[in-house]
Amino acid sequence: MSNQSFEEIMIELKEILSKMESEKLSLDESVEAFEKGMTLSKKAQEILDNAQKRISIYNQSEQI
Image (tube, rainbow, N blue to C red; front, side):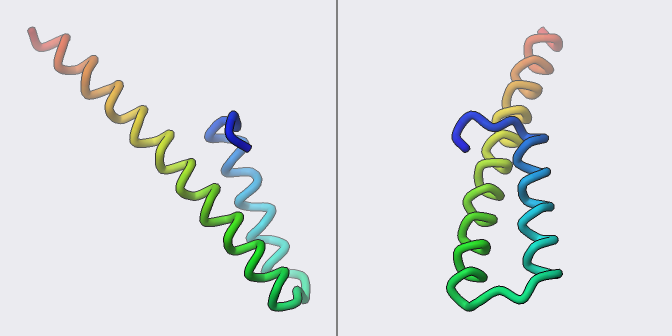
């Protein structure tokens, strides 16, 4: 999971959401799916934050 691309993370998040919406999961399974989704969501946000920083740095160097 640590080397997943943003796109791969989004696909996995959609799969988790679909599973949670369509299947009857036990409480433990639901909590596990939620925790995994939150971990993936945080990783996706980190990727977006890093991309934004790279773009900001590029934009700053272009203004000089």
